[in-house]
Each structure stands twice: as structure tokens, then as C-alpha cells.
Image 1: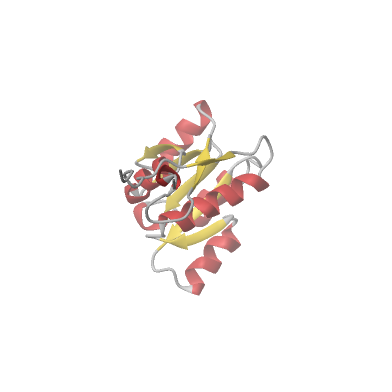
Image 2: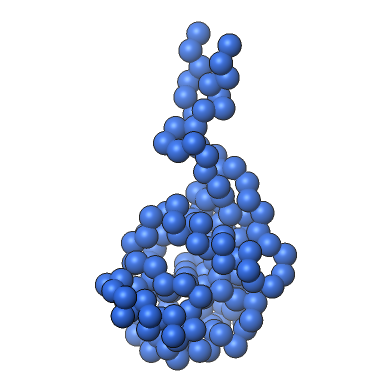
Length: 151
């Protein structure tokens, strides 16, 4: 008898991030997919709110949608780079080679298109977390829709 409860719909296996803590400024479109991947996500509406939150509550990675902030991206990244235990990822639009290079030269750990695939985003954030100081995030199997048993 085939164990159909082990078959996942959509992809053969999903990896989830736990307990990866991500603070997001701007793009709310990525919040739910990251939560689905097991990340603890906190959405903020401004860079000032991010700075206030970081002073109180630690996180692993900051994800900033550059099209949604008024502050200078290079100055913001330089300020965040003062912490060596914090990953900085930028969502850039348009994701031209020039925009990506500008973000990387400013000190970001990664630059992705403004609307990245949720799997690519989750994989990139988990990969970055493995390289940061401290205890690495665990990889766990994400919950997914399962095929019903046939009787």
C-alpha cells in the first residue's frame, strides 16, 4: 500500500526557515510566503520604525524594498552594516544589473527583484543566515497540501 500522505502537492519537498527572524520594510507581498516557510516576520512601514525596532528586538535579516523607502539606500545600508550579526537584503525595482550592483556596493548582502519567487527568496535568506554569526536557523519540512488517501 502506497503511503500517499507522504506525497506533497506542487513540489517534491519544501524547506522552511525556523526560527529565522526577518524584519521587512516595504513589500508586504513577501510576508505571507515567508511565514509559510516558517520564518518569524515583522513588517514595518519605515526605516525609522526599523531602527527603533532593532534597538529593542533582535532579528537575523532585514529585507528592504528600495522602491518603498524615502531614505537614501546607501546611507541606510551603511547604518545597518554597523552590526555584523545582521543580514541586509534589498528588493530592487527594476532589477537591472546597475541597480543590483549599486545595492551590493552599498554593502547589502544580496539584491533581488522586487517580486522574487517565494522559494528563491526563502532559499536566499536561509543561505545568508547560515553565514551570519550565531546559531544557524534550522531547516524543517514545511506543511503542505497532501493528497487524500484513496480507499
